Amino acid sequence: MRSKIKLEEIPDKDRRNATFLKRTEGLKEKANELSILCGVDVGLVVHRKEQSNAVLWPSPESLGSRLQRFVESRHAERERRITTHEGLVKQMVQGEMENLEKLRNAIRLKESRQLVVKSMQTGSINGFGIDQLNAMSSFADHMIKKLQQRDNEQ
Figure 1 (cartoon, rainbow, N blue to C red):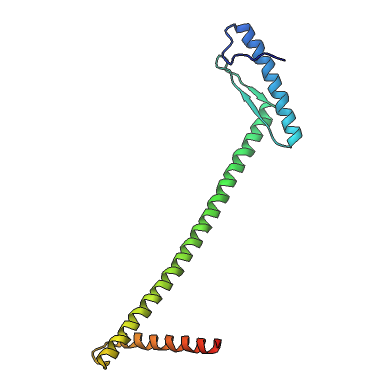
Figure 2: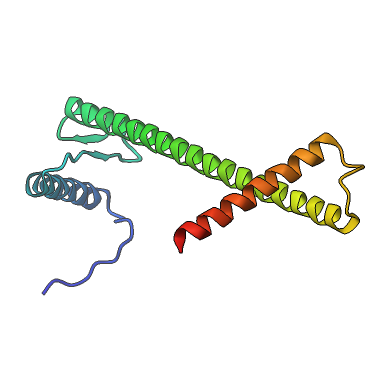
């Protein structure tokens, strides 16, 4: 059984370089296995602080094309989500507009009902404006329709 190693920078430069090369090769092997076994695109960028060149796997050209595909797919996914979100917002707005219209109709009915009650209490329709009389007429029509529906159900 292997002993655990401390995860800290190796002080000896030669040992650190040897470990870097060995571990980088192991990382490349694991990336290749992952790519083959899972059928996925894998790319590695390993950059050392003290060197200007990075290790690119599988090759700089291949990694560049993979990164480009990744960025484009992320952009397409973001666009799809925005489109989906936009559609969802439109649906929500449409639903709220329908709810608003229902509430307005309910308010009109209640106001019309109050006018009918007031006219019955006073025994006269004198003093009501044309809009109020039309509202009472609409309320009466609505109530007649409700009675007819109730009658048809029985």
